[in-house]
Image 1 (tube, protein in one colour):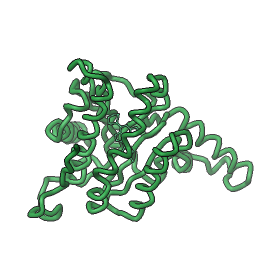
Image 2 (cartoon, protein in one colour):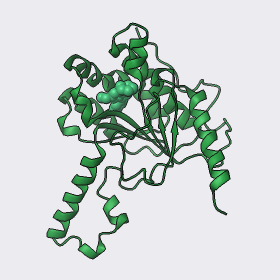
Image 3 (cartoon, rainbow, N blue to C red):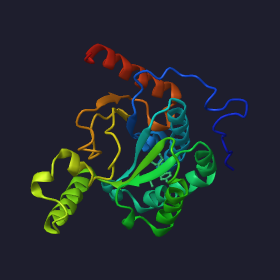
Amino acid sequence: MSMKIPFFNNKQSVESMHYPEENTPEHIAIIMDGTGRWAEKRGMSRVYGHKEGVTTVINIVKAAVKFNVKVLTLYAFSTENWKRPNSEIEYIMGLPKKFLNMYLADLISNNVRIKVIGDMDHLPSSTRETVQYAIDRTENNEGLQLNFALNYGGKQEILNAMKEAIADINDAKLSLDQLDKQQFSRYLYTSGMTDPDLLIRTGGEKRLNNFLLWQLAYSEFWFTDVLWPDFSEREFIKALEEYKQRKRRFGGV
Ligand code: V0D
């Protein structure tokens, strides 16, 4: 029994709501950590935490739409996460379908465009197919760009980009002299997007875990001990406010 949460009530359209947008980060990346621990603390199985984590995902997506964030990149599953027990992986791989069954219509009506960064080829076919459907169905939307990092690894991403660049050099489509930072970044999954302005990590750890290694070179980092299922729009706003403060204190003219 899952209840559909409407994005906005009928009386309030996105346009009619006013939020201060000065210095709002254009691209926010989030490491959604702490779902397993959240459940264990309650004597529940880890998958219960992942299930709760899905609700947080939609709440934060809604908040990002509201605050006119351009790109939101969520670390959902890393290349290292395959080391978890099979039963947990099986459950996690069913989450995109659960999420999309509940929210794809809302995402479409809010003009959200879904993309995956990471190696989709090695996901279970049912997961890949549902996610691909959502990508195709939203590809012409021009609102929030919502990236899910699935089977993603930063070193792998850079290595693949390097191999593709070398292949293009070998095919004379690119010269070695032309290959600069800007050209190279076109071979990454995030091609064409601005780099994240802000990285948020929930769950108390202060590590990157192989997330967006190239793209986070100049980003502000914001950490919280709050576990992902307890993360809320309120916490999200705290991160945005602190980001604005940092910009005010350290920004140039
Ligand atoms: C588990 C907490 C949404 C952290 C959030 C397959 C880990 C819930 C998606 C999702 C996961 C992915 C693609 C898509 C739509 C939704 C998701 C995974 C894990 C890994 F198109 N939540 N979520 N995917 N968790």
